[in-house]
Length: 269
Image (spheres, rainbow, N blue to C red):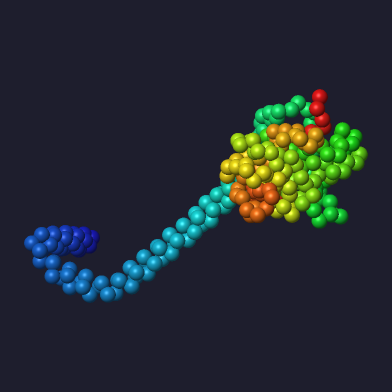
């Protein structure tokens, strides 16, 4: 037993002495050269492992980033769809509110009853600028009545009325003609449709002067279309000096392709 104890004590003492010796040698820098030689020899061996570790770490980072991006993209897509839905609903509400505000702001120079109508289609049997509305004689609609938009913009007139639908002739149709007045210079004339693509102000005496961008309104001289309805604005003169009357190109104040709802002026009170 004593030999075994002595052997254990001897081994433990040797380890302690070796540790003290190593600490002593390291303190005085005797291990610097061996360490340099070891690291110099180990770098080429360890470098591939380091690069592999970096690539593996980068790859794992990319995978985690991709998963995170996919999750964020999915959340953003859901949020975007929700926003589009809300914006669509808000847009419809805004359009309805705008329409109602415009309706309340109609201040023409006449007092009359009006009926609201929705555009329901186009006349398939006519190549002109006609459209159909979903009200007719049952609602008091009759031929030659004016058709307008909120705000007092003239669209055209009724050319045919049945029980529950009517036909509207747009101002731009070649068969359309309305007595007009320039708002600033107060020059009377006639606005005609230009083959469905525009408007022409005609029958202007040669001595009269009309200003560019001047508004053209209805004069009410035909007895059907009330005065003061907005038609468009003057763009430029298109007649030659040899013509008896002056003619001007008029830019319509409305986009006929965007019409959804109109008002029909039924008559004076």
